Image 1: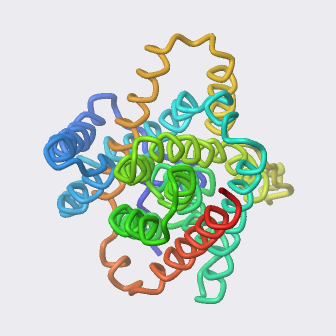
Image 2: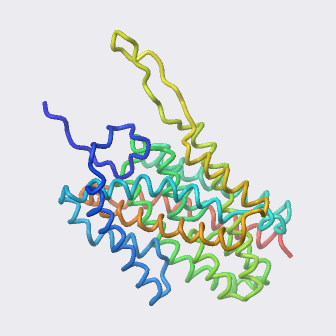
Image 3: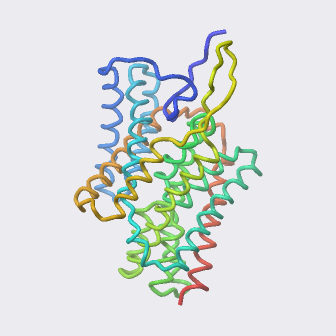
Length: 353
C-alpha cells in the first residue's frame, strides 16, 4: 500500500515524517509566495487598521488553491515551521517583569486564575463536544493569552500529531472573528456598567483575545483605561512562557529509541528548544540590558515572522477538512471566550474600586 502524503506545515517537531531533502533554491518559490501574501496583508492593515495576523490569515486562505503546486511545498513548510520556531523565541522580547509589576499582586493573581480557568474551560468543552484535550488547550490557550500568536506557539509545542493543521486554522479563524467582535462590543458594556478607567482597563485587557484589539478597545474607552489595559494584556502575554513550559511537560514530543532488533524500546520526552529560547529571551529582556531599539526590532521581527507563518499555514491548510468540521470547534472557542469575559468582568466589577 503506497504511503499517504501528510501535510507538514505544522509538524514542527518532525514527528510525523522527515522533511524531504531539498536544495536551498527549492525553498524560494514558497517563501516568496508567503512573504508577498504577508506584504499584501500589511498593506491592508495599514489602510484599514485590522490586525496583521488576521489579514495574513484571510489572504492565505484566499490563496489556498496554491497548495496543489508541489513546487511551493518546501518554502511553505519552512515558513510554517522554522520561521514560527524563531518567532516564538523573539516573542520573548515583548515581555519584561517591570511592565507587569505595577499591576499589583491581587490583579496579577486574578490574571493567572483567569488564564488557568479559561484553558481548563477549553479542555472541558472540547471533551464534551468530542474533541481531544490538546485541541481544548489550543483553543482555550489562544483565548486566554494572546489570540493567534498564542495559538501558533501552542500548536508548535503540542505538535502535529496532537493538533491537526485544519484544527489550528479553525482556531485562528474563530479567534480572529471573536476578538474583532469583542473589541466592538466590550467597551460598550464597560460604559453601560458605569466602569471607571481602572475597571474598564482591567476588563478590556483581561478579556479581549488579540493584543492590538485589547489595547485599541482600552484606548477607545479612555487614555487611562488604555494604559491599564496594556499592563493587564502584557501580563496575559507573559503567561505564555509558563503555559508553554507546562504544556511541553504535559504533552512532550515522544521520540522512539529503537533497539538493535528493530523494535521500539523506550520513549524520551524533551522540552522543545524554542520554548527554552522563549524563556531565555524573556529573562534577558527583563534585566533591561537589551537596548530598547533592539528589543523593539526583535518584537517587530517576531510579528512579521508570525504573520508569514500564519499566511503559509493558511495556504497549506486542508480546507475540505475545515468545512467538514462544522460549527462545533467554534463552540469550544466560544466557551473559552465567555469564561474569560465572565471572570474579567466579575473582578473588574467587584474587585476594583
